[in-house]
Image (tube, rainbow, N blue to C red; front, side):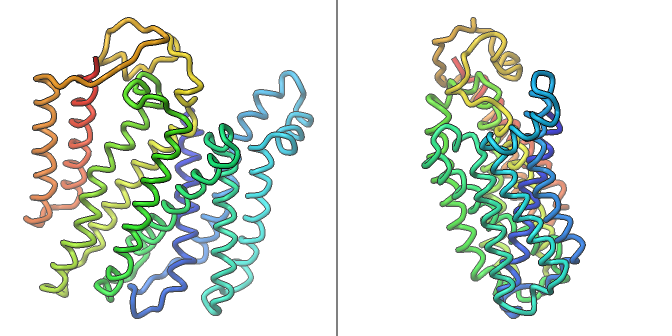
Length: 360
């Protein structure tokens, strides 16, 4: 399970960074910082797409080997299972993209950049093809998952490349002028497609917290709280700060936002490796161990949960508000970014405790 989760996090990162590189290469240099992504880094990310997406396929092959043999299992999974056919599609695209970047300098011609974007988009389509939602509803599940992943890759890809590969913070105000509305649109698209995806896999949101899938979904949603803070900080507050102080370097704060997104990627990767609540029969064997730490109620199949505010949940909400205030205070007082990140994690922990002790 650990290997599967790590592989999915790597897959999301590789898709995002690859997409971000090609997208930013289309943006004029006068409206973005000076960016330098070594060709080796881009090639490594392209290789990472088929390698990381193969891990779930390999898991199925290993499961079938004892009954069907290695060769027949490998052949059956790749050519008859949807996840195998989707991986072959992604693998073929990655080989073409790898050779393209290796041989041709895509930055010289706009047509080359568009070609890279198209191949990366098709790779995202291939990943959406093999998703949980797609297996439940081959049309709308596939469309929603692909739209969700596309919006995330555009937003996160640009953010990561600019944060970690820009040489300086030149043209940052001009960059924010177009990136802020793009990020807002991507967030709205991610939120809408995410809610639609929940319709395919979750019947009751609070009740789903009994399952490992529901726990990962809750943690993912809670990390959106500090993410919104950093998005507001990087899109609005830093813009005002840069107008007053042109020497201010905003990159550490955008790196902090990208790290919060990495936590969300981790939670999303866990989601991808757990059975959705709609496919899970609630029992003592399937209930989440995290859930049992907070609740000792008898587990039964038709159990329905709801939230009830109590003294402990109120206390944790107050603590969460204090940690949010400390996160804001760290920016105002120019505290180290790591301190701000630590406060953000504590904010999420307190919110999580608040929800879990409210469950009845």
